[in-house]
Image (spheres, rainbow, N blue to C red):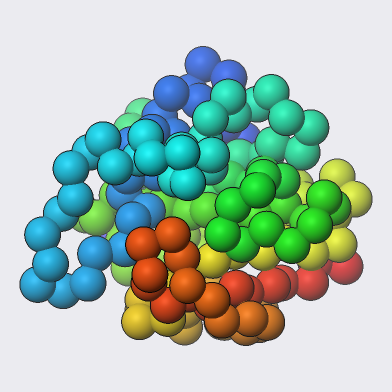
Length: 165
């Protein structure tokens, strides 16, 4: 039985947690070694959380179970992989490994979609490696593949867009 999950907006005092969730969001194909934790400080990656909360449009939500934060989803308008334009926030999401497959990611995404809608955003984008099983998850949530491109290390990625309005 799934424990009660509290989904809520992230508080400024919790922004530091985004470092861990950014690391957890890195897709590692089966059989490959985990990258070193400092990989998140690559400027191409760190842009997803650098000075989070300082930019207009920064929005984030977290999932909490029994006082433990187990997931986060956030959106920013940044010059990153899934950037479309200055009116479309790019979304990132991560749920701790032991809490995946329980619907928490879906709950986080839907809560964040509602916040983005209320703030007047018409769509959101994201970038995901083509071979990442999360592609199906994003499609179930209404994302559509709009482009294919290589990321900064040569992985084949999809750029996906979800219309919110």
